Image (cartoon, rainbow, N blue to C red; front, top):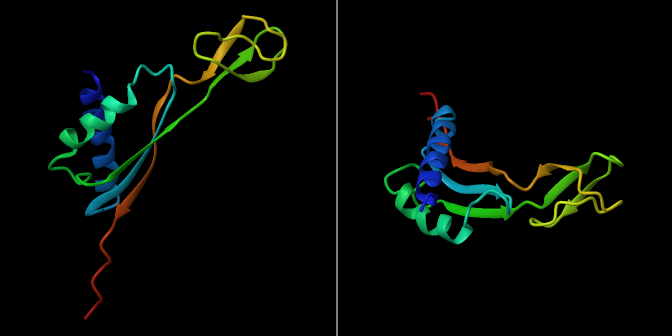
Length: 121
């Protein structure tokens, strides 16, 4: 289950961002993943509470959005959506394409709880 290791790596990024902004905790994490990323979303959701225990992200909502698979055709230049096991151009049907997206696992955004500065006396 490499999803636990992915969660731990994700939480290192989250903790670094939280520390950079002096956040007391994290309330929401938005991840974007592609179907070619090798991530099993349900396993990532199961691993997340274990990895987040004792971190500023403990109790944070984990939101996962799937990104589409997109390819750019080397023949006609069109960028189009494709299916994971058929990376062909939607315009001309050529298989000479480059993957543009669909293999990513990205930390898209965070919602941080940042304490207000105490009022000056």
